[in-house]
Image (cartoon, rainbow, N blue to C red; front, side, top):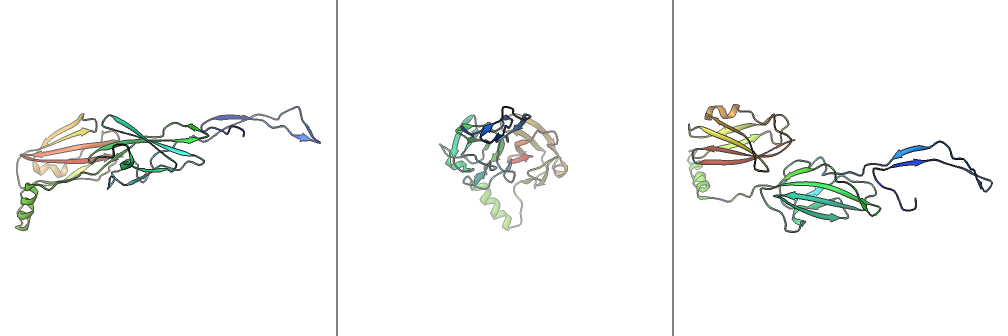
Length: 231
């Protein structure tokens, strides 16, 4: 149609016919149709999941006839935008680049007929930790060769999770273990203190909303930081 059409819009349509070069005066019964929403988001295979590299390509779901995609990226109180003629981008392509150990909130809008539509569902994307070798880690490696455990070993599983998560915990110490959970805004969500023997039976996260959380596990002078994602 002249001027094109819009996403997420109702159009009332009626039809008249032309016969022998003359248009009929009456239109038939009106019909109301609604165009597709035009909404998109980061594709399900990447939605809410950590990425292995800062340069990982992130894809939005394709929207038929969309001429441009606008990615809205929020982290640490800063909002940035990136526009593209394709449905993919990298965090490293943002003005100012990307950071390790950061959770980015990403939403996507599409452009059609020179008009931008609404943003779709927000997606949490967590970048990887950047580990730096330390004297303690090197000493632990030497001790490991002697089959002597000198530091706390802990991982969380499953990750991402849907109902709750647990720990695979191993430590040479009998000291009490503190577990503190924060959301990505820095708000403390939960705090527990347990004996080492109880750690592998501890289940957390069932009442958390979907999102990304930092888990701090402390035993004596050992501090471990984990990141878990609830779908």
